[in-house]
Length: 102
Image (spheres, helix red, strand yellow):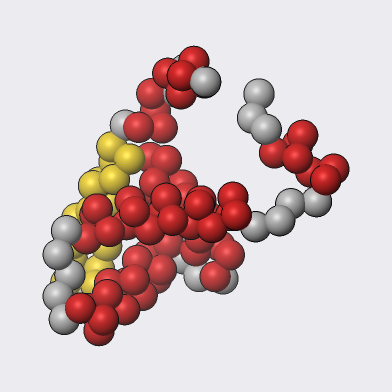
C-alpha cells in the first residue's frame, strides 16, 4: 500500500500560489497542486469557477464562524472531505475496476 503513495508524482504535492479576489481584496492562497485540482472538480460539479467556489466557501465560513482563520487549511480539509464523501457514495459494480488507478 505504501508503494502506491510514495510513487505519487511530486508535481501533485508541489505547492502553487494563486491570487483570488474576495470582495475586491486580492488574497494569495498557497495550496498543493492536487488540492487545486480537487477544488476545480468541486467547482465544476457546482457549475461555477474555482475562484467563485473559494469566495463562496469564504463567505459561508465567515457567516458561520464570524471569522476565517487558516483559510488554506480549511480548503485542504474541505478537499479531503469532498473525496471522503465521494468514497462513501455507492458505486455501480462495473465501475469499481475503472475507478482503481493504474
